[in-house]
Image 1 (cartoon, rainbow, N blue to C red):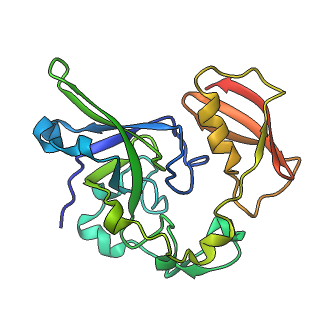
Image 2: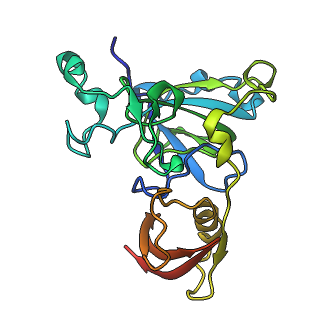
Length: 242
């Protein structure tokens, strides 16, 4: 089976560090789903404006770093090499401290037999230009890297896709852990504060890294953000143009 890339995601997440671990409805971060030339057909989106949320089916394009370069999308190495890619039946979820193994199919780890991701996002708008021949969807809540290949888009249906009584397994333990963000050490960036605060409040560090004196660096939207975490507060130390 050959998967076709119908679009690419474009946003400020130029590095994996800092990407929200899950898609969340309250996210202020906008992502553009830019359709490839062969799929820039407005009729393909007819009726989509009637939905508030969508499913994105996409590829973990930087998962198999041990087999390919970080810039090589996984769909470029499938073919005959697919059967040779190694995979592990268990992984170490960062939220569990990185020292406890769980079955790969009980997690959302990117290291899977087929590195395919699934995200529910809110549809913000549609942009179509006959002049530039561009076709884009604007969505919020996407937990994807800039340049992520999109393989399919489907409507989210509240009457069948939502299960309020569903059990969350071990993910329940850390789902609502949020930090405070202290900006007193830096000048705020107009237009980026909401995005950065949303990312930092979720604590982008792996759970096994808890040194209160360690300064972390995160790239976002052309800036490098330096910060440290003490107890339940993120202290932003510096924001520099990348």
